[in-house]
Length: 179
Image (cartoon, rainbow, N blue to C red):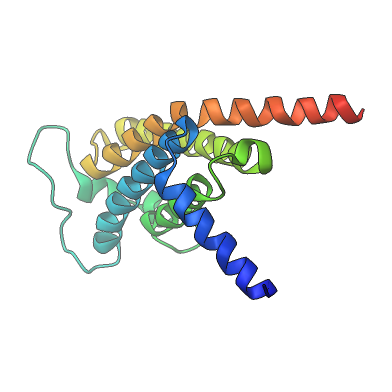
């Protein structure tokens, strides 16, 4: 079997493992994938507004909601001259990649991946908390889609912890065995 054939066989096996695994870590990873996609979709809608494709962010007319005010603010365009929803899409794409990367037993085989996913989920949650606080304190209004993305972000945190803990235990075992 050639190296190319071996690589294709390994990739096919990985795809099958990812789709069919009933491993608890893999189930939580699938949840993280779904939640990242919810956040990306929310940011996508906001990006349509922030780039002028939509003239108004659709949301229910409820007291305290004003997505246009929040997403049209100077803060939303402050960094890198890019609408913050576009930055959010890129950020959540990285989180999505970390959630979906590797085999179901990556905590043992590639422990850096679940540790990186946990770190990224923590950063995402901290930034979501800050931005949600900013909506309340600066604008006295909230964006429904931002709150949906923040909720999905916060819901990801408990999903990453068990696998990150398993990866850390595996790394510590390896260090103590070789040290």
